[in-house]
Amino acid sequence: MKYLELKQKLSEHIIFSLADIAKLDPNFYNSRLYEWKKKGYIKKIAKGLYIFSDTGIDENTLFYIANKLYHPSYVSLEMALSYYDLLPETVFSITSVSTRRTYSFNTFAGNFNYRSIKPELFFGYRIVRVKSNVVYKLAEPEKALLDFLYFNPHYYRLRDYEELRINSEMFRENIEEEKLLYYLDRFSQKKLTERVNKLLRYLND
Image (tube, rainbow, N blue to C red):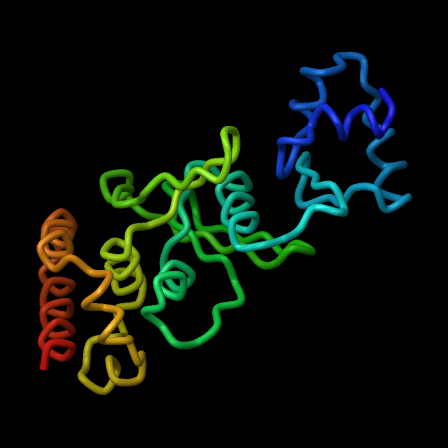
């Protein structure tokens, strides 16, 4: 299979794998990918995952890549909080939550970090559909906040919350307090509950 033929047949894919190519051409020689990479036609994201060099890298692309690199996972923590404008600082790493072990990928597209969570806490995400075959999981704002506090227990004092500089206006606009408390109850952690309640008092003052 020639490069232009492959690109046309995979035109709806943001990224593609060896398995995707094998479905189109079972006799495809993997060495062709090395040739195309050398010529600058494609870029390698991670083992077995590639992207066409002229594909634009935007937020949707990064979130989709994050889901595909490490499965199951959903984008959360600092990245999701920044997405919902709850944190003022720019976030440079794509942070996600997974039921698998903690892991990181450093790629040309960016750094992808994954935090390991118990299977029973793998919930509270929405499905974002970019197009028919491009779908990714993104934490709801309530779950992103809880994930962040769960993995960062050093945030527990008033001055810690002040340093976070959570946008209180966007908090009221994006966070459903009833849903937040419902999700919090599913964590069944007394200290986390105390910290969240303290944060709510701080933001509601």
